[in-house]
Image (cartoon, rainbow, N blue to C red):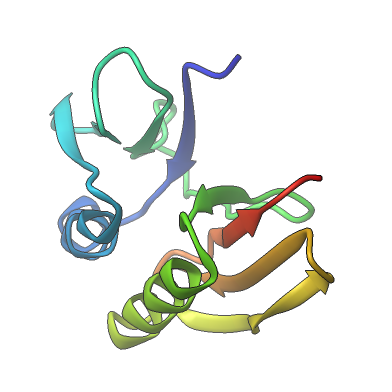
Length: 125
């Protein structure tokens, strides 16, 4: 259903360093890009996350009420992503834990530009 989601940055080099290290934990890497936009994922035919300097060259805005959810694959994977993000300088926005018992386990951070990320493990049935 999703091709890619784009989040803004005001410092591409800093953002690339953060996401290169963080997303490597789930097997994702920078797939392609140009100076102002970089695409991350596991393959070109799977959903991707893009980092970009806004096209209008106005300051990036992290927004309120939106976030990007990144699957951790397991509760342990969520914990690892959260710990790595904090190690890389992200701000805590909700420590790992059950949000909906036996269904949704999540953790929340703000990246170096203030973008909200959720690391999640969701099980149904």
